[in-house]
Length: 388
Ligand code: C2E
Ligand code: CA
Ligand code: CA
Image (tube, rainbow, N blue to C red; front, side, top):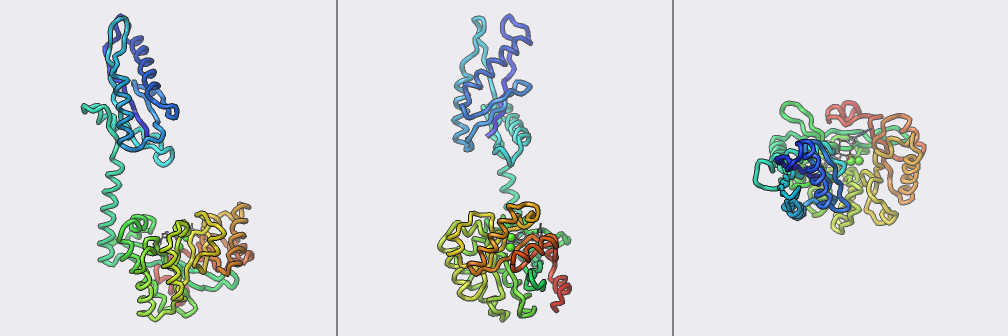
């Protein structure tokens, strides 16, 4: 938490010139501030009789109340000068500061805003709270918009080809959701999937995705498969099993042509139920891929215990593998290890032909990335790959 403490104006100390009086008071102010903070906190003087403090590990309103109470006690004591006492009054504005996400200058601006509020009230301090309130408002608005978008059928699946590394032929595609607004704006999933995933709307949204992906797949050649991203929340109950099986049944698509991509970071949180759901889907023939592999805390036991068929090496390793020896070593190790466990390996984020060639040499099975194509609307995809 960042605090901005301001000393209120006082009349000059008895017998002193204005500027000298201010210096003395400033020194007294700083001394009290140092009495206030703890060893792990930081404190720095700013212009205009202000001091900035970083209160380490203080984040809740309760902790702030305690800190502020101590500050109040310290400043209740009047300052004695030549037998006369002067009251030193302060006001404080607090703002969240986590050392990285919000920059220091934003936190300072926020604290200054809170300080102004405190100065115009009878309270000693105020906490900047706009962020949370605004975030909550934004979330509520987005969720309502997503709801309407579902009703109006504004979601669309884009498809990105997956290519066989050795034979260079199309083997399938990953279905990636887009929100196409009424005005034609195409909203990428990064702007709404996280919020959806933290709320129930992820279910209807995902059910739509699964059905839609399978319906497109049913019109494509038998040897083609489609991968759909599955949110962790969906795997915590068995509803997804019936949704998937119904879709495959309605469109008469073989289960082995559908892959569900689940992120590794999520899988590692163990959860028996998640593994059960995945195992059940797999028993029905659906393929399971571990997405973004390498970004979590993979252990070797993981390879042994996972109900998976495919590993997708995260693009962060693939991107730099020709310049970073370490990334290259990771990619190679993952491919070899996965093969030892009879898992297929997909590399994503393949942006150049050179990377594609190297991955083929390393015996990676399938490649996906801008080197081949970006995700595109279904019509374009079908046209480009002569699927209809
Ligand atoms: P992801 O599953 O890791 O998908 C791959 C992302 O990388 C896609 O972004 C894709 O457009 C992008 N990409 C593909 N090739 C390249 C490349 O060569 N270079 C670079 N820099 N990027 C590449 P997109 O479509 O914006 O999707 C972002 C994420 O949103 C996906 O990451 C996935 O986690 C999530 N997502 C997308 N569609 C769905 C969905 O229907 N349901 C759920 N639950 N999540 C989805
Ligand atoms: Ca994916
Ligand atoms: Ca991925």
